[in-house]
Amino acid sequence: IKSIASMMHGYVGADISALCKEAGLLRINRVLDFRENQNNNNDKDSKTNTIPTATTTTTTNTNREDFELVISKGDVLHALTIVKPSAMREVAIDIPK
Image (tube, rainbow, N blue to C red; front, top):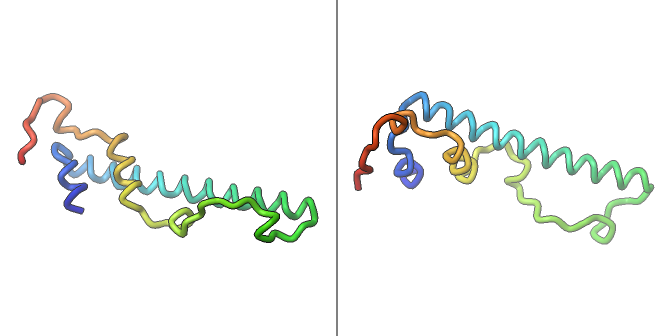
């Protein structure tokens, strides 16, 4: 949390709210995409009448994180690139150290 907070200089309450919403949407979209890909792979297996095994399915790097609705640090960092601080829009402010 401290590392993320140190990157949020100039963010006001509304910006932080928007950041949290954006991070949540990023996670939801990733989970939905993952589930859709899983369903498409299962549909392909059922159309060919094969039972998915280690040899018939493609090996992918599926982490538990791919299908959980838990916002990760990566989601917040990605959202930081999308949501910009409103306090920095009009004034150049030095970042305290």
